[in-house]
Image (cartoon, rainbow, N blue to C red; front, side, top):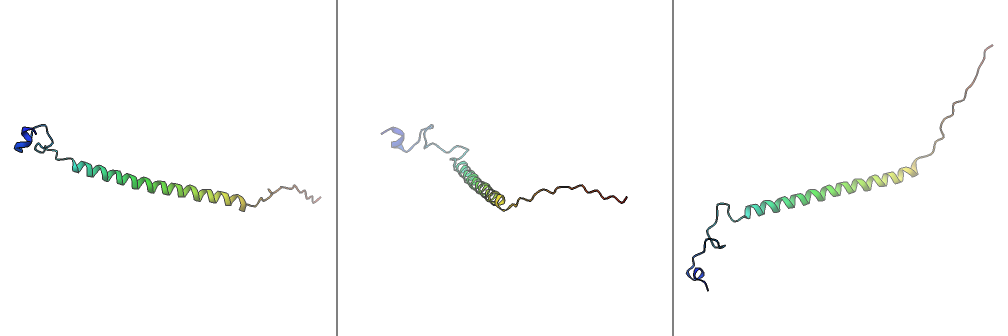
Length: 84
């Protein structure tokens, strides 16, 4: 057992030293985890919207090819009416 542990005093470089002015970092960890959670939710919603758009567009294109009737193009016929 070392002397510092026996006396209850902490060494300057140890974890038991007095807190520094930055705190213990729990605020930074909370902020970081909040941002990661927010990014995950935004990415999941964006991916869902994009995949739904792709699925609906694909279905519409598949059924649009079936429902379009081929209409023959109009043919212009030249008529000549003479009054002479």
